[in-house]
Length: 140
Image 1: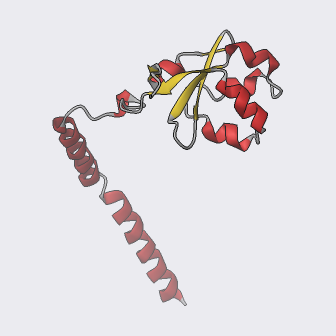
Image 2 (image 1 turned 30 degrees about the vertical axis):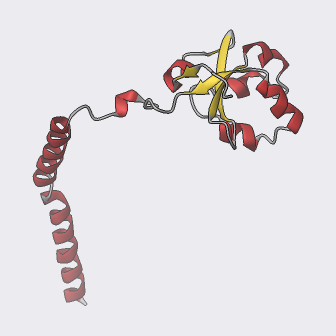
């Protein structure tokens, strides 16, 4: 029978980023999705110091955790701080979503206008380079 766990968004987890309230998100590997851990009570005991852990808040800290070469016992200890799973159905950074096609069209039109407006600069540079090269070769 599957166990019910609390789901958290990355935005929720990233709000817990202080020494008094610190959550990290790490991949549980194999059958487990990204898991959320409340490591506040462990910060003072962490062998690498609390700064190392605090740098990993608000993002997927799996690579940081694995790169540190944690032992099997450290990985087992981490499980005792698990408070839930990351809800991957919601976007990690909602602000990056394009809200409508209309905005995307406006962006592409603005980009095209800028391209039309500034085409003369690279053409002038190439033209001057060709002219200088021609004059240089003509003097020889």
